[in-house]
Image (tube, rainbow, N blue to C red; front, side, top):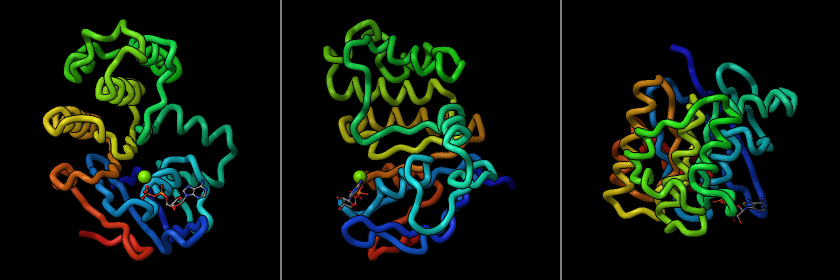
Length: 214
Ligand SMILES: Nc1ncnc2c1ncn2[C@@H]1O[C@H](COP(=O)(O)OP(=O)(O)O)[C@@H](O)[C@H]1O
Ligand SMILES: [Mg+2]
């Protein structure tokens, strides 16, 4: 079966070594949860896997292409059209409405807005409000909807449900699980929610500079 992602022997350090010799594969319809204490390097690993940060050691292939051997332009193309990244803190355009924020993503990725998705996320009724008028949880759901609107092949999500109550979190993630199943996509999720991690097809713990299967 064709891999969506193949990471080999990744190593990275900032002030101290974060991890070494991390290898990971992601296949279509698979979801991977990464757990670990704060500061263990989960966000750094997600940035490396998702085109944002070249690793100091090792390689990352997305869709069979060594992404850090590509030109910046080619890497940007993959990021824009095939990869969806949900950040820990969301970056919405503050002066815009929820709808406009999602439209920008649709425009860049040449897709259209899925109204059913907005309904499912419980944000249909607030889509004409400005971002600053939305609650933290609504903003988080808008930013996830924006990423989904791109129809990415791989979704990278860094603690995406931190601002949501458990029920809403599981509803939103349920939609993402359905999506990767239907579209033969993949999900790489950083989370502290063990129940959510339990719904993923594989779980790993980033600890002691290693990525350990759970
Ligand atoms: N760009 C950066 N420059 C310097 N240090 C960084 C940078 N990004 C992260 N770090 C440091 O790397 C460590 C791991 O951070 P991070 O990957 O965010 O961990 P986690 O997501 O598991 O909490 C932290 O000590 C953090 O301060
Ligand atoms: Mg983090």
